[in-house]
Image (cartoon, rainbow, N blue to C red; front, side, top):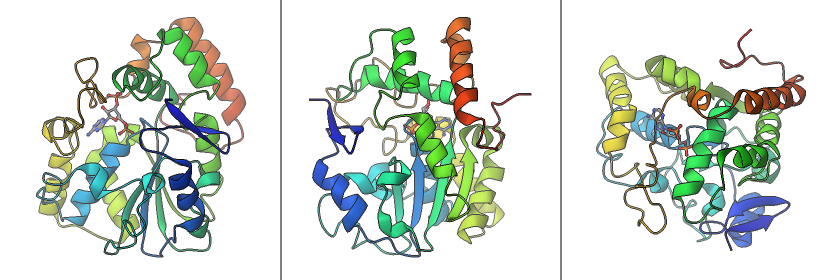
Length: 285
Ligand code: A3P
């Protein structure tokens, strides 16, 4: 069994259970000083885990190089052991892939910070395709064309990209919320780190900022065993099939979507996103 079905959502069974999901939604108590990094999968989750760790370490890579990323900034939905997140010092750094409807309900009314990172869905689709091939806990995709169909229909882990993004963006005025894109992080990492620091109320000196930017580069992260997933056994993630830190660029979709697939996806995108009212780096004129 590859997946758990929870309230209509498909999630990988390896790290999720009905208990962990129910606890995340209803049992987990959000605190005002909590800092959440929320992403649809393959949108820059690991990158944000690295950035948050490094910002909180004032650019010193020691922690990022000695503790796995998933323990430094754990996913709330994967927590079953009572006390695991409860006993962490504040501010707690927490990841989540949950759509807003399944998120801890105690977020609402709290002053916790939410950083939502969004990425061009075509690149998310490509990244998820390769990830599905290398991760044995996901359904192995037949071919790319078929995978685009599944992705477009939301028949992949964590459901529809459109619903995830629209759901969270719909809450942005009601929460303590920062919207970032993978593309702007790639274009200007230093500027993005400064925006994050400002949002967190944690300004960094130039040298600390240098440390963050250097250690969160694609190359540095690829070398870091604590975030490149080489600690995960090969029978779970086979990086010979495709490395976890695979390409790390915007626009890789152009080498994967056919013209017809791209046009069909654009039509769906228009239809789904017309009311969102935000221009993204990939929405060229
Ligand atoms: P690609 O498969 O396109 O290379 P997530 O962490 O949400 O699973 O997302 C993984 C994607 O983020 C992968 O995309 C990975 O290479 C990319 N990524 C991770 N760290 C990065 C970095 N420092 N710079 C650019 N891309 C990065």
